[in-house]
Image (cartoon, rainbow, N blue to C red; front, side, top):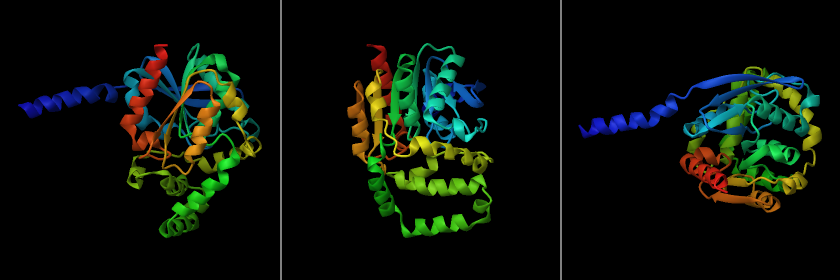
Length: 305
């Protein structure tokens, strides 16, 4: 009898998550159209994926438990996921910041809470600097460095972590017909081989639920538009202008040095950082429960101010 009670309790615990309805949205923006999904009800949280060129697919499984208390807003950036392809001229931080504000207006929100990952943090940082009155809180998950000063260090660490097997596997994938013809499945294999270097426990790589659209190779052509903004980039001035409370979560096994995350934290006036020794670039996957708790704790502390 006790086993049945435990089983029923477990089902009741997971039921609210499983029963959450996902709603699709198409949001028209300047010279583009963004694909968006929402889950749950409550205070809105907008998620910004990494890239350029990834999409919301890998974030949803990691954060869906938050839908019990919040409305989660996931979107694909221009030329990413299911969003419409965009021309190179629109691939820049200014346009992407305007896109985020278009999402805010679409959902009729006075202010938004943003959770960004990796390269997506650059997009979030620029938004917070350009639209300071429209953002309530900002959470940066293993953000890329604020500038290019850590590039050589990251490249060296990446080489050191690449095994002989990984090098051979990379060469094999590149020589396949699927990769040469731009098949998304082959591109994803190569991506995951690279992501493997950023995990503390490489067995956790299987928990990364990333999907790529069939038109990924074609969409990637527009990413060349980022070359202007990303060449010798430095968002230090923008970091100093951020007014909202900021929380940084960083996994120390990342090839991005911990000094880069600390530098960002030091440049933002109202910010805090938490470092996980046993997680990497995808800290919210390797340490999911702890990440969720720390994110909720931060959001709740801000609401009490």
